[in-house]
Length: 405
Image 1 (cartoon, helix red, strand yellow):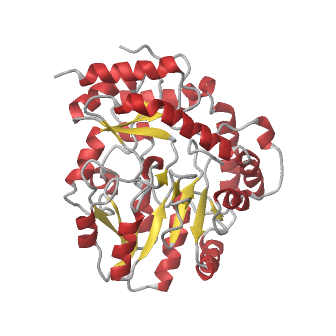
Image 2 (cartoon, rainbow, N blue to C red):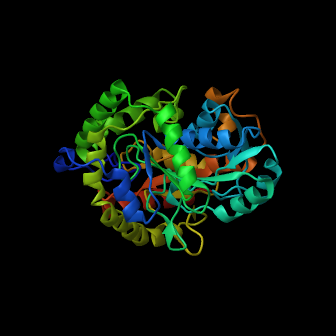
């Protein structure tokens, strides 16, 4: 049994804030990230989910007869909640077996003249097959929105993800690389569409002092606690309490409620993000270097699939995403690792139809590949605070579990 780590490791690689990041400054975060990524102008939103909501509200005005939004059956529950809040209908597409991409045949069956948008998802920083979504969207006259919430810095064919479709969005939530505690970035290649998005944002997401004060206090807490000495209080103890209560959904933070917040981001949080963003390119390079160092060891684990990118793509590496041979051994690994403080966790607990609180929002659906994906997957954080002894202990634990008949 791996001993519990004295200082908690995070489940994702976030960019720690420095004291100097908290000083006032220019509110240039969106422009700075656009310059780094080489994208058209980006719109800053209060969350990645808010970016999706603004996108959907804008597209609904352009094609009001279309009501359906097609998404992977294994994705963040915030996605169908945003679709529902936008007055639209979530439609689920099963995954390819053992993969994060939507099944090509299932995608074609899910899309028709009622489809407003398709959401290929760059899950866990890995680069999705956007080309297939584009082909289907072109056939039925739908839009493509790239969900790059977990993939800030990922690249495809030499350019940033989020630009192959009509729109794309990123998250700046806690632990997701660069963070202003909650924030998002919305991308669109077409200038006219960007103007429409800006008008929609001004209408449905105005500045609200109460929300900005709350997020500012939360950002200060994140700056203080997102480090091994503070993560036990902020992350580890709530995780273990939820697991003791038999609530894995709460343990990973999958429990959300409507209505989803919509408001503008204040100047101070923008300045904090702009200060930290100067370190983002080096941070992403370091995450990639750590991943390349550890990947051979993970790929050598018998029967384990380590999710990676297609040819020509270079994802970001907030964490490693593993599929174990079966749920029994996945669960056995988590019994030893999840509460031990090594940053081993799960991404989303269920396929979307299996969240009780989404009943009435997400349709019942036969999505066996998504359910299998949820049942066999676990994640390992790619934090700079993980040492070689930590990683060795994780791999030895996984090897012992995999050797069980």
